Image 1 (cartoon, rainbow, N blue to C red):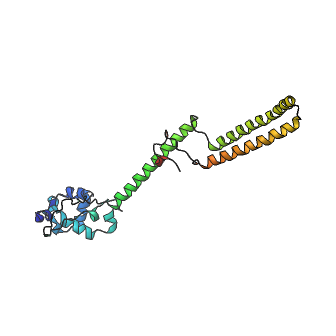
Image 2: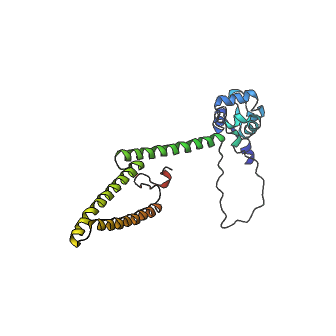
Image 3: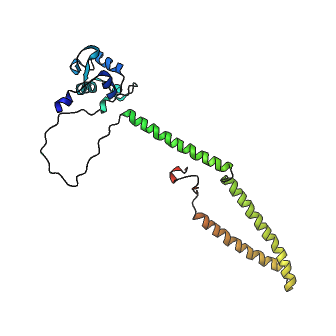
Length: 230
């Protein structure tokens, strides 16, 4: 059976498909002697290719650029497995739990470049989709710019404190009339107490901010952390 495999023949078109070139390229290989007469069966246009012998000749006679497809041929001669005569090996005892090796997968340099390009295009598509979702959320009011949010929060908090501090004078006047004490002294004590309340609140806000992440993922926009922009 090994002898039959080593003498397997194909038409020029079939052999061209096998090594991923055009049928015209096979004719050029024959004309230039890169596929020799001993790798042919028959003559003329009806000649058939002796597969294993032709592959060995091309592997040794084609230059590197032709084998890896730099000239646009996409030739996969260098990675095609060559069938060799089987060597009889002594029978080894079968193991009950022997692992089966997966079949080897051959990739040409052109395949590797194509895979890399496909991965990069996929990453670009993910980034464009994430960007479009963010822009849509920003336009609909779901998102807002971080700088604008900080400015608005700071302005609102400052206004609230001014309102509360302004009310201290009214409270001091009311207490002074009720307890017959100087309004100025009562206002001074109220301001001191309110200042301590502000300091405790500010420290609490600082500690709370330190325990929270800088960025928060919106689960409705990003299905996984891998889609979250850095």
